[in-house]
View 1: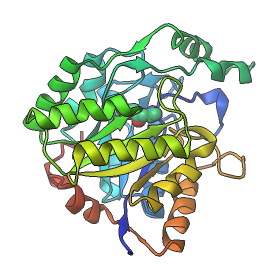
View 2 (view 1 turned 135 degrees about the horizontal axis):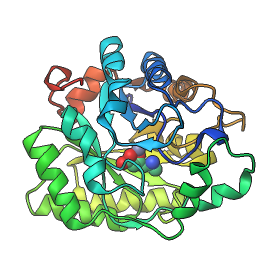
View 3 (view 1 turned 90 degrees about the horizontal axis):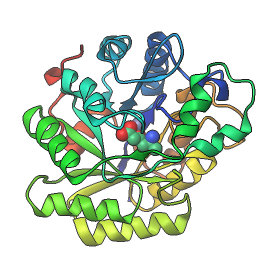
Amino acid sequence: MSRKVIITSAITGSIYTPTMSPYLPVTGKEIAEQAIGAAEAGASIIHLHARVPETGQPSAEVEHFRGFIPEIAANSRAVLNISTGGSSLMSLEERLRPATAMAPEMCSLNMGSMNFGIFTLKRRYSNWKHEWEPQLLEATKERIFANTYADIENTICHLGHDLGAKFEFECYDLSHIETLAYFVRKGFLTGPLYVQFVLGVMGGAGATPENLMAMKSAADRLLGDQYHFSVLAAGKHQMELATMGIVLGGHVRVGLEDSLTLPSGEFAKTNAEQVAIIRNIIEALGHQVASPDDAREMLQLKGAEKVNAL
Ligand code: KMH
Ligand code: ZN
């Protein structure tokens, strides 16, 4: 059956660093341009992190979000989705600052504490553009990405109940779906939920079709008909597993936050290139790409006019 498929484009993230790709957007201008390009190519949700413009270091400063939010809001209808994951090394208090200032239609919510190992990326590079890059990667070997029950509950109450944001529930493993179901059972959350199956992050489930099936089965059992799902795979399996997500009835996330390359192995020069590839696949399978307003209706979002576009 033909249906509308939501494409999220995650523009820059906090995993990859400037040395790894010359195309990784870093400044406010670059993030805005790539986000607007991704929206024009068919992304209805834009997932956003900020970086320090001079160094590319992950940032949770509202000032840095101000470098691109107004520009994107003025030039597209896309749903702006603000990360509350920030970087795995930031405190929760820091991570919540941008979404608190903006009261966005959507924000991410990471559903469990975990290892978030990106230290293995370090081996592949030697001439670093900035000193912070190898230091940050190495630090993920001994730090925990903390998202306790209290953290999750506070975020749901503060950003969800008080400010009207809906969540992209980042689920990296089966246990995160169990945790999400707990918050539904306790009445903190009601559908439609937007569940992101995150595959391929070291510390979470690996990027395999079997893991995706297991997550989908768990979500069907625990969340019934109260949820939509989307699939993201970090690294080279991005498009394959996103395609499997479409076939299973889900939505997709692509973007340089999750993979710096195209299926050919070449660098993606823009987020829009990845969006165009997945869009072609969606349409070749007989589906349509959801518009931002389709996404708003499906996910029951509050509307762009209720956002403080900084
Ligand atoms: N970087 C992704 C693997 C967040 O921003 O809250 C997951 C993510 C987390 O997007
Ligand atoms: Zn993110």
